[in-house]
Structure formats: structure tokens, C-alpha cells
View (cartoon, rainbow, N blue to C red):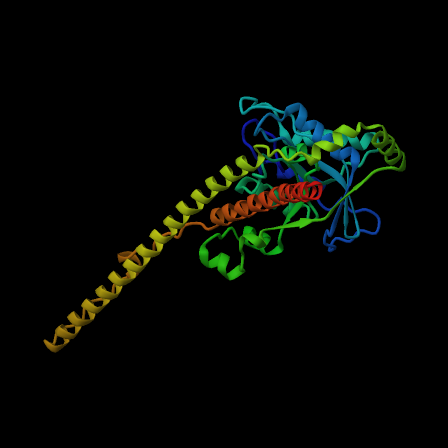
Length: 353
């Protein structure tokens, strides 16, 4: 279960009991326990609550988090309600996160509102959400409730003119690796895990009632025409520069991680050579002792003489690579929009000339 703590920037996994209490109850009519979630349907009110939560408590790179409620209908996950985690610091030792979540779900049940746990949400800062904390939290959710998803809301990208809300789940391969808790290079290679096979994105559909659709249509008719022209502005904001800076930081981290892994490989190779040389010396010495009629030397435990080196965990490298891929996708989308506007402006200028 994700928990909201000021300054942590991601979810924690200490409150899995609340998710476990809701496990197996999120089935709607016609739902099957073995069905995979292929689509996420979100009520428009839930989207507004998530946006409002960030606007009230999110400041800069501060991350806000909350619980998603709903039900599963066949292969569709319907998210009908949500509530935020209250903002608190680590000094609030008396605050019980599990009790708070259970009380909220109990209160929603009393007023006949969907109260079944189906996942959690969190905001992100320039797409920086591929972290170990998010991985651990989502694993706890999916382990307790198989259909759980995590919604990632990007307020900065949304401010550019288009809603950025994506749903992710851990892939079955990564779930198996996390269950074994073996993140060694051999285990990841055996499971065929790469940064592309860590998270799977689930398509999202935002559903509104007919009255809400009519209201939005009326508001669109009354909206000022000048506001729509802002999307055609050729000025480039600092979004691209900030994304490139974050990308370079992650590339530096990846470079340092590669250096650590190369050092481990060199030390392993050096140890193997020393082990081979030692075995050759022992063999020659035994041959000499045998020629003199002396008994051979007793066998020794090579694992005690040459202790195997601890391989570096590769999960952090996969997460860094996944975050780099996310930054590249964001930069690609942003530059594609800007280039499209520039080409359109060039065509208009040539036409006028």
C-alpha cells in the first residue's frame, strides 16, 4: 500500500494490510479472478479529484499520492472514486496509515459509494516516476490485488495543453522476479528482463455522464477563441531544457553504474586467474611429492580461499534505463509538437510570400 509522506517523492510499502483486506473483493458482475486488465475506465470526477489534490498540496517536485477505488468488470478496471493520502511528516508517529485507509473505505461503504481497492495514484515531476519505491509499492499492490494499477499524473505536461494521465502495471516476468527477490545479473538474464519488459501501459478511457458531456459542450462554445491560439505559439518553454537536464543526470548515473559493473567483472576475472594459478601450483607440488613417495597434500575448500565476489544488483540499472527511456519519449513528443508548428509556420510564410 502506498503511503503519503512529505518529501519522500514516492510511495512506501509499509501498509500492505489495507490492500490485503480488499483483496479478492474488487470483482464486479461478470468479473473473473483470472481475467487480465486490458482497459482502465476512469470517471471524470476521479480525474478532477487527482488534479485538485496536486493543486492543493503539490508544490514544485513535491509528489502527491492517493488510493483508487472501483471494481473489475471482465477485463475492464473501472475506477469510480479516489481519496488522497493526508500530508504528514515523519514526526507524526501516532498517525496510522492503514487505519486511516480502512476508515475511509468504511465511511464510503456506509454512503453506498464504491469502496473496493483497485490501485493507487501519484503525481510526477517531469516524468520522473520510474523508481525503486514505485516498483516496490506496485508489487505490493499487485501481489495483494492482481488487477491493481498505478495512475501517473504529470501536472507539468498537463499545463502544456493536454492531460497527461497514464496507467501502468508490472509485467508478469517482473512480478516473478520480485517474488524471488533475486536481482542478480544471472537471475535477470534467465528471466529475460529488460527495461522494456518492466512496466506495461494499460489504455485509459475517461467516462462522463451525458449531463457532464452537455455541460462541457456548452463551456466549449462559450470559451474565448483567443485561448485556443495559445497552442499555436512558437515560443519554446523551459520544459525541453529541464527534461534534457534530467536526462543527462540519469545518463551520468547509468555511466557510474556501468563502471561499477565493469569493475566487478575485472575483479571476478582476476580472481579466476588467481584460482587457476593456485590449482596449477598445487597440482605440480603434488606431482613432486608423489615422485618422492610422499602423500599428496590434503584438498582444500576453494570457496574459503577465494571467496566469491558479490555481484552488484542490476535492478537499479534497469530502473535507470527505464527512466531514461521515459525521458526520451517525453522529449520526442514535445519536440514533435514544436517541429510540427515550425513546419506549419514555414509553410504559411512561404505561401504568403
